[in-house]
Amino acid sequence: MTPSGRHGPLTGVRVVELGNFIAAPTAGRVLAEFGADVIKVERPSTGDELRTWRLHRGDTSLLFRTMARNKRSLTLDLRAAEGQRIARDLIGTADVVLENFRPGTLEKWGLGPEEIRALHPSVVLVRISGYGQTGPYRNRPGFGGVAEALGGVRHLTGYPGLPPVRTGVSLADSVAGLYAVIGALLGLLRTRAGASGETVDVALYEAVYSLMESSLPDYDAFGVTREATGAVIPGVVPSNTYRCADGKYVVVGGNNNAIFTRLMTAVGRPDLAADPELADNAGRVARAADIDEAIGAWTAGLDSAAALDRLAAASVPSGPIYDVADIAADPHFAARGMLERHPVRIDDEPREVAFPGVVPKLAEEPGGTRWLGPELGAHTDEVLAELHRTPADITRLRAEGVI
Image (cartoon, rainbow, N blue to C red):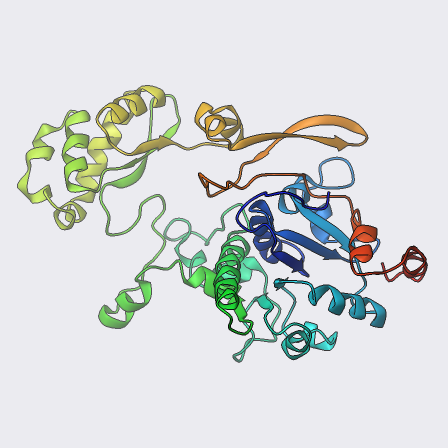
């Protein structure tokens, strides 16, 4: 499984992933999908706890198989002195190091920025934590759900007067992972230009905070505090969710001026399409209830498929609310390569299972899935041999529990 040949624009880039769970592994996954040789360092015996998250059957979750695809798994006890020596040797061969431990953990292991720079001055160190490497909260433990609350998104999620809710995915961790990819690539650009290595500091709460659009300046300038608004987005009309005759809901976005005219014509309200008060978004916001009532009355008389067909014919942005079964059956997802099928063994039973495709799509050197997340330590001997450890060394390290 050692990467060979060209597999994407990051071929030749080596990444050492020291992180667990979602954030750093998300960054490692994306880099690996585009050709980087990502070596995932895991604890001996147990590995990344993600291996047992959402485990329905078998001993390794499909969540881990997804998040660790294209990576090589090396078991290494970073608490042991010899494990730390091996980690330093490995980092000396790397272009990027990813980690998402609490600030100070790498330093405790003798793997902090100063030690890493001494080993490899041009390496890019990407650090993900709950609150960042500086500031009064730096030492607090911080998981994604907490970051979503502190960063402001949780306050806006749900309906007025009801408890805030969260999305059903690890939003903060995933967004932080994407920012970590951006930071890693920016750091690589810097080193490719001959400069010294970069340290990238990604905080989970800041990744969420970055999604808050103009909430802060609107508050500071006008005293406006955005609140939860259910299915609508404030200040943009019409953009809402509407119930159809079959009990399903459709999302309609008709807030562009020209689209609004087409939408109102399609729903049988040419009077609203021609109303000069509704010609721009400000006028529509003032009469949001009237507009939503008109659209809702129209969708209530049609099955969702018929409503969406008519909206598409009128070039109005609209769509169904899918669950994963709908996604798995959708021909557009399949045509775009978003439903990759790969063989996997579950309880020793061979299966072919659908996994999400790679995003973004590149025309010349597209990313891809070369293998799913590996078994724990599947590449330990291979990686250690690359670090010039002999078979006798490897046998001893395994007996001592270092690997």
